[in-house]
Image (cartoon, rainbow, N blue to C red; front, top):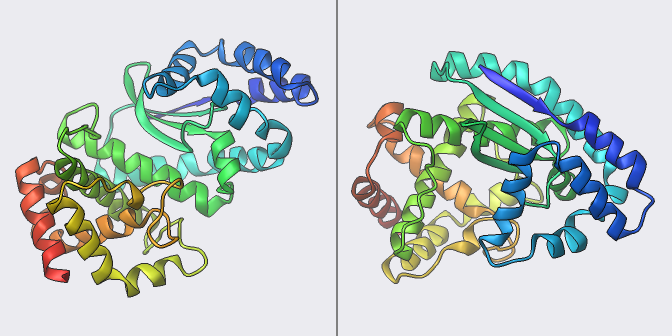
Length: 289
C-alpha cells in the first residue's frame, strides 16, 4: 500500500562530493542528484516558477547552504521516517480502511515544503523535503510522525472525496479561507486520531495554551476576515503569524472539525460541499464570538 521512494543514498553521494564546494558547484551537484528523479525535479522547479520566482535563485540563497549546516539533522530525520512508515501502514488500514497505493518520497528539494501532499508516478504521494525538515528543526521522531500523519490525512481526504487535489484554489478570499480551515482542520483532527492523543507539532513555548486561551479572539479574527474578504495567510505557514504565533489556523481548523464530528461520520465530513462547509464554519466561528 505505502510505496517508499528513498533518495537518501543518492543524497549522501551529493553531500560527500559537494558539501565543501562553492555554491555554484553545489547547484551543479544538486542538479546531478535530482536529474535521477525527473518528476521531482519538475515539481520542485515549477513550484517556484508558478509563483513568478526563480527556482535557481531560491536554491542558491536558501536551500543549498543547508547542506553544510544541517546534514546531521537530515540523517536523523531519514532514520525516523524509515521507522515510522511501517507503523503508519498498519494505522491507515485500521483507522481509514484505505488500500490504495500511496507514495512517500524522501528527497532534497529547494525548500518547497517539509511535507507536500501531491501525486507521484500518477499515485497519491507525500513528498518529504528533508532539507526543509532540517531547517525547521522537525527531525525528531515525534515531529516527523506529526508531519507525515498530517500529510497522510490530506491524502486520505482526497481518496475519500474521490479527487486528486483537495487544495482547491477558490477565487474569492472568503471561500478560500473557509476551504482552507476545513481541509487543514480535517488533516489535523484525524492526525490526532492516528497519533492517539491531542497533538500539534507546533506546540512549543506555550503555543497550544495560547491558542486555547485566545480561542474566542482567533474565531472573531477569522470570522472578520471571511466577512470582509480579507486573506487569512497570517493563520498558516512559518512565514506568517498571529501575534507572534505561527500556524494557528491548524488549531482553529481542528476545533472546527471537533465541533461537527459528533453530527457526521468521517465519510460525510470528508465529502462536504463548499456551501455546507461555509454554513458550518460561520456557525462555529459565530458561536465562539
